Image (tube, rainbow, N blue to C red; front, side, top):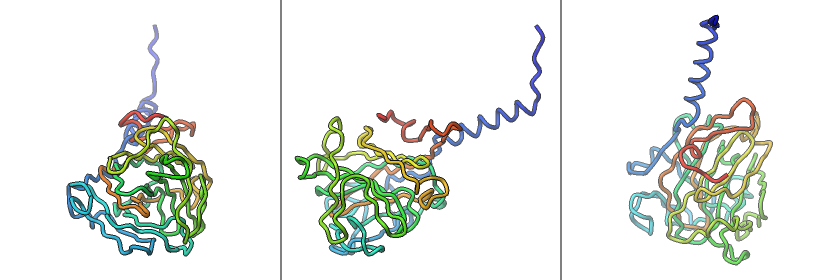
Length: 272
């Protein structure tokens, strides 16, 4: 049988492409377990809510925050925020990780601990105070028989869009969100749970305790859009909260544009 000769340049190109794909999938961008108490070098605090401000953030124990976790015992709420019309203004810790402003497709995972029954979540594709995408859950929603509720919102140039539920404006008492799917157990106070958010090109997907909650597709998230890239932040409103084990991993989108593999999902089997 005659041997088939493959030009060296083709072989080298295939190896290079394979190497790039392997490197891109699963690269860790950030990990913070708050073992280093000097959190001020890694996180920047913003208070958009005016009631209860200024917030106090620190590494526990203290104020109900578990030992070694990062959080705030302060109840921050209401107020117009930077846009003067923020929906569900609160407090958040923004990553100071170098290069995070260029992050595009990634998965962010965080363990959370409610000390009240209100809002907690994550910002993704954070550009500045007037431009970011927010994902949250509420530990107790009385409008839905005390079921855990959730929401996804965006703010672009100070204008808010609420994708699930309805807002009540900057002076209102919260956003009314739908209940999480029935197969997801309620989140209890003072019990750790995990929130993971995956942002892939123009789509954001939310998970609670590894189970998919919902996803949204939006043109502002698409390449070239105002929310095409950006940082992450830890968010709370009307709710003293603790956070731990924050991890961000890069995501690779395969050429077909439909199949993706994220660090978070590769790391542990998330139910899609």
